[in-house]
Length: 578
Image 1 (tube, rainbow, N blue to C red):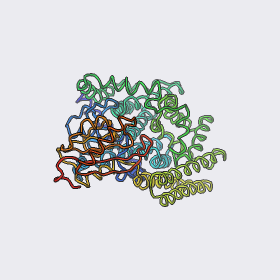
Image 2 (image 1 turned 30 degrees about the horizontal axis):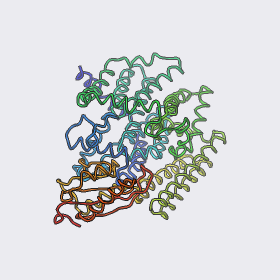
Image 3 (image 1 turned 120 degrees about the horizontal axis):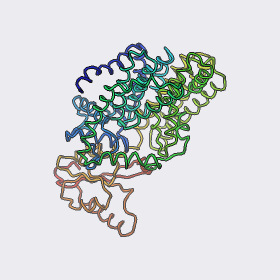
Image 4 (image 1 turned 120 degrees about the vertical axis):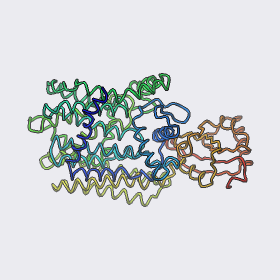
């Protein structure tokens, strides 16, 4: 039966591809802008703590062990998120390994390409949906504004789930809108496509994509008091295909982990996020609205005007009233859910950004007819966001040993481009204003992630790994132990790195004739009298007996404090470059 379903309906994804291709040349522009924003920092920025390093290391271990079912970080199962993003990373890393040894050399760019692909999908989905709801050039404006936006750009350069989740979710919502607005003879095809996209989204990040679709579908049906357009979702091939996508891996991982995956994913990860600020990531309602002005930069300039145009369309019942309703149900209910949840992180609302980008594009189209209050609100938010982003560049360099003068110049460029976009918009030159706004976003992405951050001292793992490899202190027999326990260090070195506290490291590493690489976080040594003296004795003995000892300074941003790492190699000194 699965073969029949795939043979008959496997072409639905190709229909989506053809939909994108039909938007040319707009899709070329959207892809170019999104790639320009996404690729800033992909090659130059080291692996980030802590989530990115954990995702990347888990994928590396899948490749090294050949086990594509279990998700593990070092010697522990990581039963938090489904496997989808890891499988996509397997493909990009395998390609990178063939080209430049990405797996062996831990070249993080190969892992990040999966997120870059997700960002491109998100921008193209926004283009297609914007043109569907508002016509050309709304989709083009929406696509480039989303592609250059701060939050999507950040997530597109991090090797985890959220950019790909945004891409799959907007295409699922596009399929929902085609189900609602398309001809009856195409309804079943779009229903099948919707099921497939929801399943793929669930394979990447659990219930988020199905939840976004359900909120939009229920909200629209309640608003319009029409439910019959949802009937094609009961067409049997859709649920069957979704089951075939999800169930084989879910059964396999439950067997492989003895039933622990669902228990830990639901009980230890998802459950606490619903009732408390999990892992110290709490926040009050309004958290995401407060961050919107600079995370949605540069599209924030046009968003108030677009919201005003949508409200006016609903009130007047004009030709775009239906489009306004659809954009609202695709963004507002989803946003409210995450404002109410006690656990908050900025990227949680990213799947709502495509609909907001279409509202921003609407603001571009309706700019001249928009009351001045709404236009000046957008201008004020644009200026505030550019000042904040410029200040971040300056403070990043000033506080963490980066290039202060260069950061200042780049900050001025961002602010100047933002003001230029405002001036052009006030003169009703909206097309050039969009171009100038996109330029401001691209300068921020290039400056922040591609130039300034990599030159700071915020990456002790990178510096430690670079020193170790430069000294040629690693061999296949070398035991690696570290009391600097950030996941990025394990990713930068090797999958058999042991992360532990200092007492455990000292207890296991006293034989200095053994071939060991020891990395000790001097900022986390025991402080009490007797443990402190034991630690001092161990360090004195290590310095006296190691074949090579180095220290590096840096700042551990995950813990919010400066750190000093002592790196020592013990064993056969004749074989070690001192």
